[in-house]
Every structure is written in C-alpha cells, then in structure tokens.
Length: 150
Image (cartoon, rainbow, N blue to C red; front, side, top):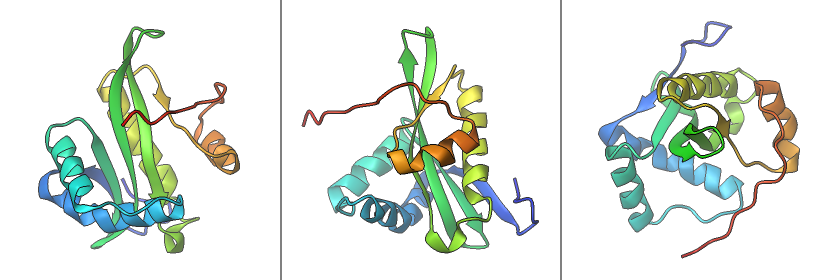
C-alpha cells in the first residue's frame, strides 16, 4: 500500500527480528502517552509475543524510516461468537502526521483482522482522539475500562 500522494509509504506486518526496530517508535508512543519506555524484560516479552503470533505489529515506512505503528491482538467475543480484534499501540511520529500514514495503518490492520475472521475491532482511546477514530470509521460503544492485575 502506498499513500495517495504517491510518497512511497509502505505498510506491512513486522516479522521476526524486525520487531527490534520498533522499540524506538514504541518508546516514543509510550512517552507521548505519559508512560515509561520499555525496559529490557518488556522488550524480550514483546519479542516473544510477536514470534509466537500472539500480536501482530504493522509499521508504515518510507525508505528505512518508520513513520508509524499499530498492533492487532486477536481474542474471542462471546457477543459475536467469533474472533475479535484489539487495536493498540497506534502512533504516528509527529513529523509524519497529516500525510495519510494513520489511515494506511488502520486500513492494513483491518484487512488483517478480517483475514483472521474478526467480526469487529476494538480500540480504547482518550476523548481527544475520538474524532480521529470516528473519521477512520470506528463507532462509540460506551466506555472501555481497565484494571491492572499484576
């Protein structure tokens, strides 16, 4: 996939050792969200999860530069009685925003979710991000909440 303006932005799944190249972008995402960067143990767990197919990362690249990322984790929905996707880690580096990178990432993730049989894809976001996700076609379902159990 390339961007509409033909700027050679390519979006694809990140496989194998290529996940190591995402850690800087992931740390940028975490820092932007007010979280601590990944420590070495977290990077190892994440690499194992990718290697085992428990999570799929997508990266938007232009030449050798990563412009944005997102991830898909597939679970199972009792409501839909089918697989359900969870989109996380959506981040476009500030200098690449407004160039269609986010749209390309979401489109690629949705293709993968469909290929994995997902009936829907969920994402949790802040109130300030709702218009962007609605622009991508997401609909409000209420309030998503979480609790740490570790």
